[in-house]
Length: 230
Image (cartoon, rainbow, N blue to C red):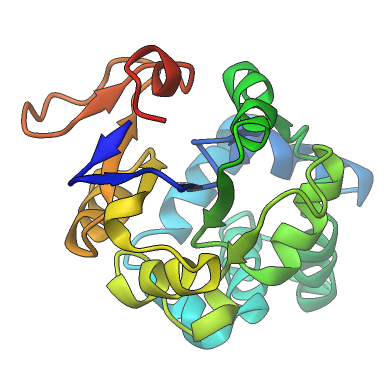
């Protein structure tokens, strides 16, 4: 396919919600806590989680890195009335979170990713995740060493929609913005950020929830081939 007069040479993806799916946060938290001898109900965990996120600024991830998730866990545990060894428990949850998540590739991602490589395209990830998370996740889904570039928060100390993270990925891949496609599942962080960088952008909207008519959407990653995007 031609994009702005140039052949597409690379496809970049967001990670969670785009390529990967996991169990819901309250379900994961319940499993971890049960193994630690703490047994609140799923409803109690859900309420504690929602309350913990009130006023929380996820941009602090770029500053706090892994400590952000420890503090996030402490807020949830405090809301659940846990007081004994709360810091140690919060650190355990942060360290072992991905062991309880049932993280897996979406079926269309499992089919599409190897086909992109077979076509000689460079493939990368730009995620608002931490290096420690990505290092845990990729081996679990069979993608360790698969991507030509992986840009995480730790890479530049910046987060999407900051255009610098997209520019960095393009530089590492040695392609121009007009030669690359980006696919993500969030309008603000993924779609708008990549668009400002000059990439051809598609929003993956598997459940047809996005109403913005100005957003180019696909309902399956396989549409990248069906629409001759790549």
